[in-house]
View 1 (cartoon, one colour):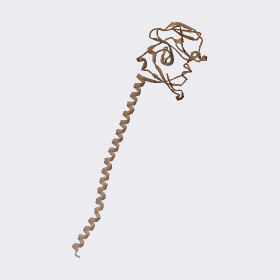
View 2 (cartoon, rainbow, N blue to C red):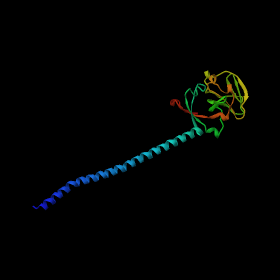
View 3 (tube, rainbow, N blue to C red):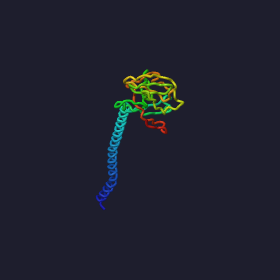
Amino acid sequence: MSDDALHDRSDNKHADQHHPSVSTSRAAVSQAANVSTARPTLLTRIGEEFVAWIKTLASAAVYATLIVTFGFQVARVEGQSMAPTLADQDRLIVNKLIYRFTEPHRSEIVMLYYPIDPDKSFVKRVIAEEGDAVKIDRGQVFVNNVPLPDEYVPQDYRSYEDYGPTIIPKGYYFVMGDHRNNSSDSRHWGMVPKKYIIGRVQLRWWPIPTARLF
């Protein structure tokens, strides 16, 4: 065998030994390119989802603010002046929108600003509207000389004072707590202007076992 033939075979063997390395190098470059492409895609997707979540959260906050400002308000009862209808620490939903379209009416439970200190708010029941004549005789409430139906007041919650008679001025309301002998109300600090009535108590949602609509 000639030296030339031996040299050719040696070159072929040498070339065959290097082919796997070239193939492996190309695969590594391809894999690196795929990883490089995948990373920005994953980061972009995470960024888009984060932005979408922020937008959803911001929208929910705006809607909640609008609802609280113009529609409904969550309130908490403090004290026993509306017992047994409402108890201390009951949670309420107050409809603030309803009195933009209608007037408060007798027997409705309302949330109002305290006329003497509007920074405070109370929950009371409307007893008489503008133009009504109110009189209390030994605890029995009369509106326009008719006894007020007040079966929601238990006997031991009644009071026995006298009041009036008086006529409710235009734009004002006479309110009382259901716990007649333990309530500071219109008998003590006068009538409530309509502008001080925040809204109608629509729902007691807590405690859940006693939840109810009004």
